Image (cartoon, rainbow over all chains, first blue to last red; front, side, top):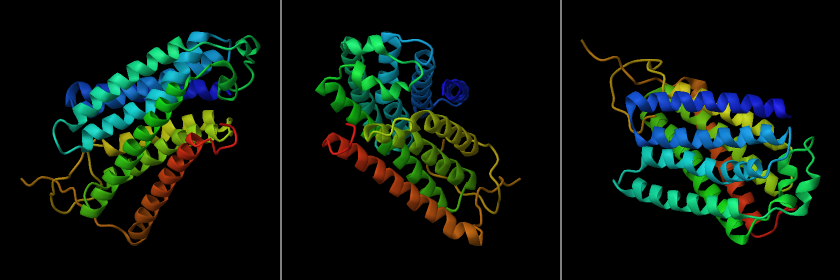
Length: 240
Length: 47
């Protein structure tokens, strides 16, 4: 299983570098937020790799904080910056998200571990064991749920909405395809997180890899400089 | 010189495929959110 996590980590950091590189010359807060979200995604899969070789309390806490709590919300925040019409809305939400993320970090790093940590089995998925090891307070659970709902709705909902807008206007087919792929890719880890909650723990690693690969293809497609077919110029709505 | 166009003409198959994909994605999104809410209410098996 750790080979899948290694591959996911490589793809995610390459994807993050591509997004930060685009931010370097295009600017746009959405790219910065997506880049940060992808770094969290990569830290989540990297700590999975570490935890598949040996147990580390720090790695477990980083895994939970980044993978289970922050990734979706920060990726979704990028989409909020892209789509929010009223100036100030995205910034206000960013302030709230930053505050909530800091509180989440304090809570997770302060959370105690149970004696079950001594029996951690590297051959089993961390997603199958963390509940017995990491003591999650009601606040951690609540923030995990809220952050995931916010991230899922904004990232996947935003990509579906963008695809619909381009489709309705019949402009930039590459962005229709790109946004459909981004929504589909984001759905994989989002569903995996939900399935873990439902007890299906083994789906996580595969869904992380599929999710990031499909999102990366979607990003490349959506940001392709040359649209496919041409008739007459129309200025598009949101762009990636 | 005019700018290259960004418009496209949807093919027959994409006229139904794209809306179908968008509906499937919306259903996937709703199912995911439903599982999150069910887990919040302690109604999922391993929560």
